[in-house]
Length: 485
Image 1 (cartoon, rainbow, N blue to C red):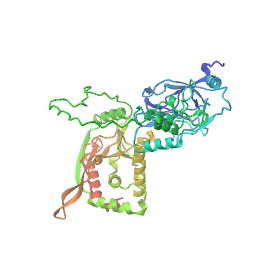
Image 2: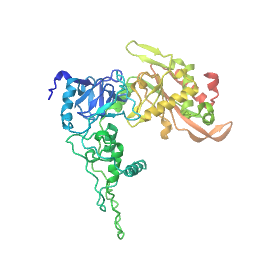
Image 3: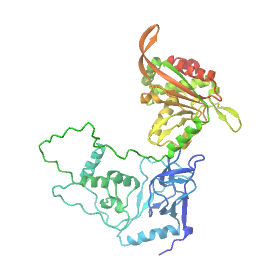
Image 4: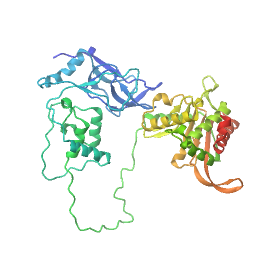
């Protein structure tokens, strides 16, 4: 047997996937010790203070060791995985090869990358070759197609697996072969099994060379005996609860501690820095947006906007861009070191988005140069990408001004805190039908409240008021978009 030397082991270090990041949390490993990896293959997903990204390995070999478990926060520059390359890879794989040497007609199986996965590159290209899996002894015939289909349909309908319980006698399923090693399965299949509570060691594989497929996992779920229906029993009258008694589901723990890390940690630090560095001023205006809402409905019927996201936020964003064009000094930043005001002659429009990972603010680059249909396309792409958790670090850098739409939560307005490095942020409240004086008569109109927070070091009350008034004027009379833009 070949002895593996330290020179044949490559250590892959946590890279800086953003600009100046110092740490990242390992969300999920896609490989385990003993797996074969190829140049460009994604080995793990990490969460930084800016986004969740996938890390590709930059060389071929066999995984020797994972240095940190999932959920660990690791400093940039720290080795996270050891891979045996060259002669070391052969030595690492030798015990497995000996275990399957007597397998007749053993062949390696190609594993395609999971469908829809687009690795975020961190200085490396995506390899065109596929991962090679080791052959496995005792591959079993495929499970019954009917069982797999039934299980898939049950999962699509939102039904979980039935609770294990005694059932009428049925033909026993063949036991999975015991190889003394880890069951072979692709990362998506392992995740599916984990979500469904299936032990892969008990699953009968049907894929090439003993690889467990998604259908095998679903078949294992479907094969579990269903719980028998309970026998009818006389209904018992439950005693009335005491007015002073605690609810049965009362949690005596009383507290839950949630670690602050990743996006939430970065957001907290940024907001504290912004709140106690930039002197905030917030101004408000309530505006009749009935005509804007009518224009939104008209644009939805326009062929030019077919397939695009058309909503009030689109026209609000355009109104803000028009106001910035008329008052360019609002689009600036404060350079503390140089004691200078830096006026930006471009607008990278940030849109605050609430995601399961926390609040993020991706921005539309050069939004000032986009037509209304182009802006609609950019907003739609930004929102869908954020909801899918695929926003890149680059998309959240370089913003100049931001919009936060608190109205989607039914909130009338707020006093937003500036994004660090920006001079203004516009909060949009809920659009509600309210009594409003229109042409001398009280009528029901669509009304909303806007709030503009700005950095009082570089934006005085006059400039801030002009910008907010211009946004309100455009939304009240959206035809001004044509004459002012």
